[in-house]
Image 1: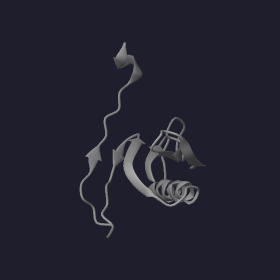
Image 2: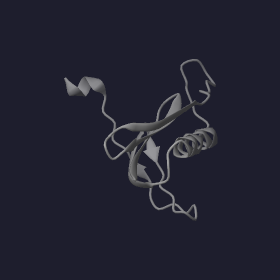
Image 3: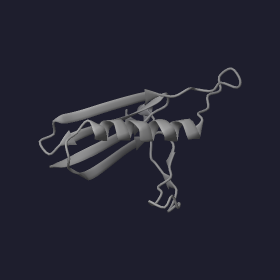
Image 4: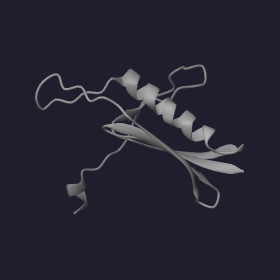
Amino acid sequence: MNYYLGIDIGTSGCKAVIFDEAGHQQSLAYREYNIISPKPGWAELDTDEVTEKCFGVIRESALKVKNGNVKGLGISSQGRLLPLSTAMEMHSVMHLYHQISGQMI
């Protein structure tokens, strides 16, 4: 069986969802992370915590499905994405496009 994994790395949490070939949701995992506010109106994230939580939801989602292969991967993220090899070597930094909703009008 082939599966498709979607990862959403949002402002306050991350989730991973796995679908089968027929488009049926097989698993979903979600974790929130702390928003750090060093000054009023400021918001920061601890990248180590975000990374840990993202790997956690991927692991949790994967454990909920039967044996198979992930055939496709989709990532939604606010900000930047840093792809790594299996040896944890940086390949490139991708600037992900995000659109302000007012631009759609």
